[in-house]
Image 1 (tube, rainbow, N blue to C red):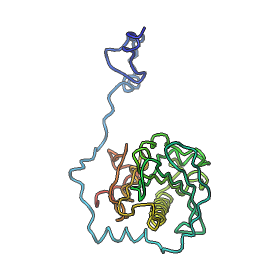
Image 2 (image 1 turned 90 degrees about the vertical axis):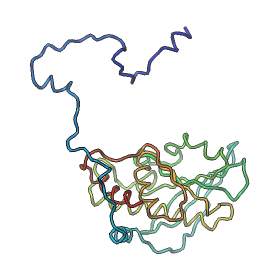
Image 3 (image 1 turned 180 degrees about the vertical axis):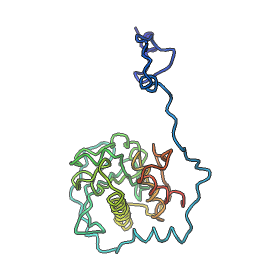
Image 4 (image 1 turned 90 degrees about the horizontal axis):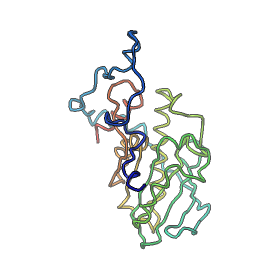
Length: 257
């Protein structure tokens, strides 16, 4: 049995050598034939020919993300020491816009001494569709960071978890997308503001980790926040054609980095 299990293929494996076929298309209909034709992208982009924006234009874009560094009024709402590997703090502080507050979860490793190198996270788009941060989306894949002796900050960004405001990727317009990117950048920068004065955090060794949507948006954070020294963009990328307003906005920033 063990030898048989070793040869089991993934259900997603579509190799031509797998299994056998139980259907034969005998239709002469053009529509039917088109369904099995390879998909060819129209006007694929040649990224080797993309040009970065000038410093002057970049600084104009950058000005949209400026904010007043008002008091954070941060509070550690709760502390959880039950994990064998880290201490979990739930923190709140003032956002850079409106009268809103940012929620953030700071995980401090138990296997190393402060000041800690610290990773600030932006999750995948699944966080937009959850309304409680009691279970953080994607958190299970991040345990290795704390176990490596580093601290880990997971901010609750605008539109995610308890801060949901009806925004979704399916209904986003160019204007709402732009406004939310600005708010996400400000939430990120306020998170850095919060970490800087903490004596248990090494402010000179801050890193960014973004996965999926966080990898795409990470191009903004890394271009606009000079206090971040290292960035990891996991499972992101460019659209192959210029048809998505979200990616076009991202590309403007990314090509300047």
